[in-house]
Image (tube, rainbow, N blue to C red; front, side, top):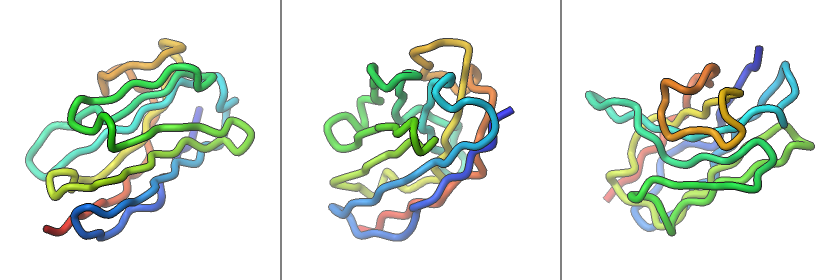
Length: 125
């Protein structure tokens, strides 16, 4: 089993930046592909970014491409999400997920077995 804890959320003005972190403990972190998802009130959880288990492959939702960057440090058991040029529509609770079903990971939340508790990101206009 893997335990995930997100941090780094907060309130930021439009155009600003935040860096989220997701610290993992338990099983070998490098055996898991990781993903960031977000959920706004009244909406389904949506894919934001994913990274393969060794960090070679990254992929993004079209809505964040060019603004967000996912990375991982397997030595620190941590995955990051650097968010630049934030927009009010980025406001949501952000969750990290872990999966062993695919080395690349997935953009579907149903493919992830472990989740953190989430961290709130609020972007004011």
